[in-house]
Length: 415
Ligand code: FEO
Image (cartoon, rainbow, N blue to C red; front, side):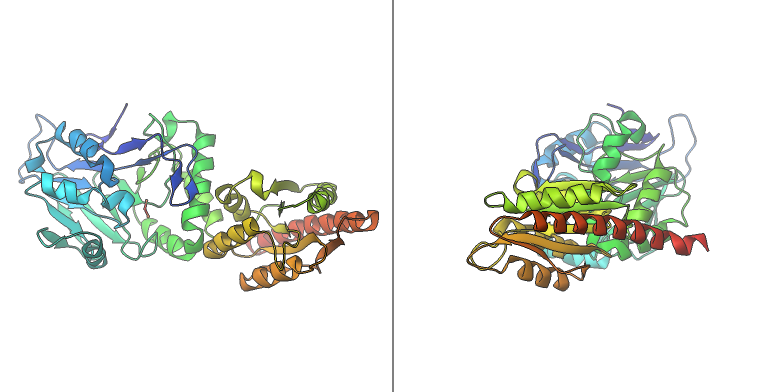
């Protein structure tokens, strides 16, 4: 495995091939927790007049700290690690810090003030030696320098990126990451379509509610000369930086594509028949992609990712007792937290002795700031031919609205 970013900068993280549930996010391709060792020493044979230092950039999840330390020890004695930079206090990275601090007796933990406070809430840091750094501050390692860039809320309040100007390497923390286990460490060693798909899933499920802070972080990073973009999960970007930056430009504003999503649950098949009719109607409009998902055959991770760039949604559920189906409740709760921006929808579903699901869905969608495009389409017990035609018309309407939404997005750029 090629772990060298530059001479003197090595990946020392952990490839997690088996994780399938990352706090509820279905990580079908596993993940990695990336940590990096930056040595300030000159290459062998080169003069180096300054005293040199060595820094570890971030740690890994607690159970994998031994593997991290083994990789570091293969490169330098652990008592020669001078700094451990903590860019982010979330425990998929900081969880291994107590073991790292214990194993590296001469290391100072380098982080911003907010991170120091957060680490103190997670761990007993009373014996840790901290070096608190300010936004824009630099720390010389000798031949290389660490520059710290605070990027609050990309992903947590203390989130920070670390830049090495001499090598044009930015350690970007969660931003631009992917939950993607691979023996490849670099974007040009892996299948790019898989990497981009996982980057999109990662953005949708981790960063979607934080589009503005992520844009602010990107604006700060735009002033840096970057040849290697090294996130804390997945492969490192060096050949396709422009691709991931362009994708983030779209994702951070939830830019819609001409896409209609039909998402529903069903009890005895009536709402399923309605969903298929909506799909048929939407698919009859040229230039629109239509995707239909039966909730119980999918998962919230996939659906949130599909919502990210969908223009319009059809959300369906039969009435179960006094409301919609519980799996729909789980999805809407998840989406409410992710706050997809600029979406428009209609609801549909069957009902019987209790008539409540669509009204409850509409109320929930209004709370989520989703625009309701038309009254709900409903069927008493089973959809009649007239109701199915109403569904087809609703599908066509959603497709036309999707095209119009995409045109409206494009209009300002064309001026
Ligand atoms: Fe990968 Fe926000 O931690």
